[in-house]
Length: 290
Image (cartoon, rainbow, N blue to C red):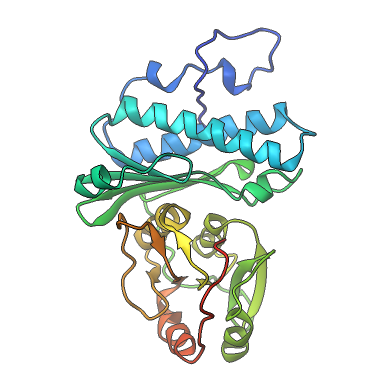
């Protein structure tokens, strides 16, 4: 993965060669003109910062490690976007939201510096992510999802199509679900679809599983913030997958309240069957975002 850091200190020979603090800060790098390339570079760079912080603070209390990771990746991404796209607005899980400015802007970066803090804080887990997406004039136009512990960055461009489910995936759909708090509708939905449940970590990792073919669909009905899904949804759609609300209506981003009640991501050939099954399942009134 490409690297980066918010530190301005020179390389320290006592540090490991791949320590992210040895890299130049994002503001020392040439500006990247192409939005998709920038999204990929920033997601990879924030991932590199997170890997360094995870190693440096190994053994810390999980809550402290999550806080350190969130703050470090936020600093990196905010500084990089100020350098590369100073005129654009920003919506981030870890930043202060200026709703008026953001709603009036024609370009808004929607980021989640660390998607899956619980997994990031657990030694050995790789199911956490970094999300970087650009919303432009009503739609998502560029995005990247980094899976730093897997040395993977999924982007909107170039876009190898993942249109159909992988051959030999076995009978029944594989539904990516939260390992800690799956939505209540998942059990009846799985029965209707004769589906298998595949537990995993962050929302970005679940959508990445559909993109990469290790799951066939991701359904969530407990509500999420826009930064939880913007980047992975943009990558999924760019690669030929279906993404919508569970009633089939469009997902809308950069809203005054950046909250999405539900979503489904799946392969196009499974869309009608999944949406029909969802219509037969009544989602609970409230659930915890994941």
